[in-house]
Length: 72
Figure 1 (cartoon, rainbow, N blue to C red):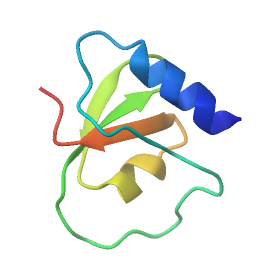
Figure 2: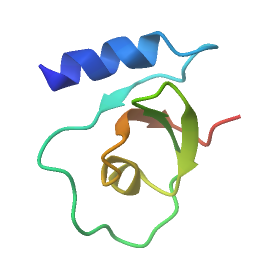
Figure 3: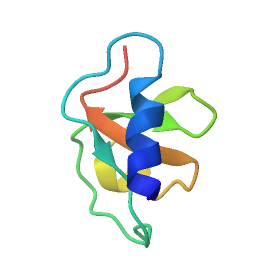
Figure 4: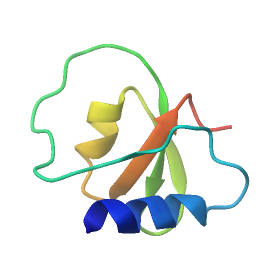
């Protein structure tokens, strides 16, 4: 059910979100590889922030999901 809420929150953010949106799931990642494939993450409070990868975005418990590419 968390995945559905994450997609709904991502759809409600200001401005068009890049597609496809990936919802973070439990359990959250504990370790991520060091690479740079930037994503734009949606946080629980509605703000967006760029992260190095989807893994690093979802390791932040305040992130509900992300889309490819850095935030503008």
